[in-house]
Length: 101
Image (cartoon, helix red, strand yellow):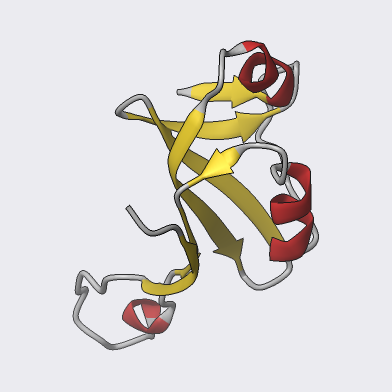
């Protein structure tokens, strides 16, 4: 599912449990929000996924919201090497910020 910044602003005191900053080959980043037990991609008003130039740009964009935890997520490309057996490799997760409960 998707959510726009305007839709997020219209919610009453939204709490983002987890902000995942998804790295796309280290050049672009997407924001996936865990909000009200749903995972939502931050998108523009046309339904296109919002792309950012850095993880800092995402954090600045969402700075006004209550975010409990932020992680930068990098998927591994090693499972795509020629001649290797396909394997499920968990992405690298780097905790950037976490609030105390």
